[in-house]
Every structure is written in structure tokens, then in C-alpha cells.
Image (cartoon, rainbow, N blue to C red; front, side, top):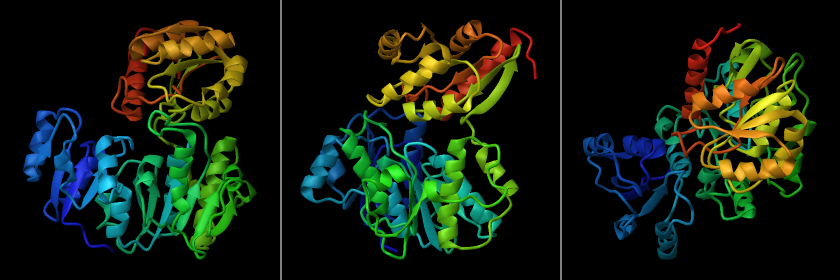
Length: 425
């Protein structure tokens, strides 16, 4: 456990920034800097915690600190971060700071372009079935800093993103899982190698006694120091994963490999893990209208995830696609769109970008406005035996707070659409 620096600047008041304020106020001298203008409620929140702040930009006042903690949404090219690095001021992600303050029994960290949340939940479910009372946190929902006290002498299961790993120095999980890698977040990382290097930091501090669980494609480029478990070579326990899609079996193998290597107990029954597979906004069946299923895959925020969703859904698809695109990786969609997609309904600020791609690929499309308009258009295009699939292959921040907000908006739009005509269970 590390002593807390006396003066800390927090960049950004999103979910992570709030958690940092709640956890650290009164224990260190905090300063909050936000590039946008703060809402009255946010100012009241900071005042209640006696935290001074600035809004509308990051000034030199940020640098009067012993530590900078950027929220995940703060890009690495932000000038104040470059200046802090030039001055030798440490920059840690919230994950790094939480890890230095916590005293868990052991830590399992999970990263990857896709499947992180499912695998993290599965690791937690396996450990819980063994009676070990894990704390599941990180990018999956609860910021790690808010669980530091709760996790003492308990297993810590963390979903970690490239944004969080980028600013780690000492972070050393006893089991580190890197599932897969595909072009993503190129609106944040300056190039693909930068994204890969950020992910690779999950293994950076591991020693020989630690466990490195990774896909074969990752192992081709890395040589982790820990005990290597290759996900594709793992065998699932008897009775696990029957009838689930192949990408879910992959997640199961990764979760089991990490848990078995660390704890070494007999596998729990698969029924104990099934609730972890029901991820909200991930291939979530919303309902059926006149025999046409509607599937919410709002967590499909990149092309790799949307490809997995298209493979998992049987039959022809009307695909709702778009949002804030990530500048790379979309060529992977072409063969599946040609093979499975009857038409696309384009949403969000990326409509012109996808329209150009789809014209070149010969895939029909229409443009839409709000979620209800998108569902109406998708429903009009669908034929019996088709599925309407929201899997946008894009970030949500052009129209929504996050992918969950987008998914809930589309579920509400489905309820309104269903009220316009008979729904069939």
C-alpha cells in the first residue's frame, strides 16, 4: 500500500472523477479541472466535498500538484498531460492509484478489444461460487477507487481498458487476461501501435509466479514473464458452455484459465455462471414484433464486436449502425454485411462515413434520426425470418451519455413501436 500524495489534480468529472472525489476528499488536497462547463449539480457536488475546481479548460493551475489523475475520457495528447510529463509530475490512472491504495487477497485484471465485461463477470461468478466473496469493479461499472476499503483481503476482479492501462506504472495483477485485439479507439490513440502498447501494460510488472492468460494472436507479439495460459488451448470443464456461441466459449475458457491457475479448486456447476452471461445491452433480446426479433447490442461499440453479433444472430439481419466512429477497423464488416445484412439503418454523426462505405460494398441503407425513427425504418425493411439488430460498431457519445444510455433509449423506442402494432411474445 502506497501513501497518498498530498496534492492531487483530477482531470474530468465523469463517473471516474466523481468516484475519485468521493474516495479522496479529506484525505488529500484535491483540485478538479474540467474541459467543459460544469452543471449546477456538479458544482454543488464539488462544494459539498470542499474541492476547488476550474471549468472550460485545463489551466496551469492543474500543475500545482504532486499527481495528476486523468479520467478515462481525457485523451493522451491533451496539452496539460504533455506539460506534466515534461515537468516530471506523475500521471496515474484511477486504476493505478486504487491498486496502490488497496490490499486485496489477489487481483485478476481483464482487458481486450471485446468480451471484457462478460469475462470479468465470469471470473467473479467462479470465485463467488467458491465462496471467496470477490469484488468486481473497474471499467465494468464501479470505479476501482470506490472499492479500496471493501476489497481488503478479498479477491479483486477488474475490467481494465486501454485508457486506464495507459497511465499505469506499478499495476501488477496476479492474473492478467488479454482476450483479443482489433482496431478500436483510434479517435483516442494516435495510432494502432499506441493502442496495442497501452493494452500490453497489463503484463508489464508481472513476475514468474503470476499468470498471463492471452489469446494466441496476442502471444505472437508478446512474451509475458508470468505463467502463460493460451485461451484457445484451454479445455472447459465438463458441462460448461453447451449451446453457447463460440465467442462466449472463448470468454469462458479465459475466465476458467485465470481462476484455475490462481485458486485451483474443482469447477463449480455451470448453472452458477449462467447469470454472468446475461449482460445488459449485449445481444439482449428486447422483444418480437410480428415474428421479427429485436436485439439490443449497444455494447457493440466497434467493428469487431458487431462482427461477433452478426455471427451470433441466425438468419438475415436489418442492422442499425452508426454513432461516433473510431477511424479504423471497419473493413472487417464488409463480408458479413454482404452475406447477412438485408439493409442498414444509419444513425448518429457517422452517417456520411458509413454511407460511402456501404455504397462501395453494395449494401442497401437508409438514414434515420432518433431511436424511434431508426426502429420504424428497420421494422419497415425487415421481412419474416429477419432480425432487427442494434449493433452500432461505434461509440455512443454523439447522441448519448454512454452505450447503456443508448441501449435504454432503443429499448424505450421499441416499447413505443410495439404500442403502434401487435407484439408477439
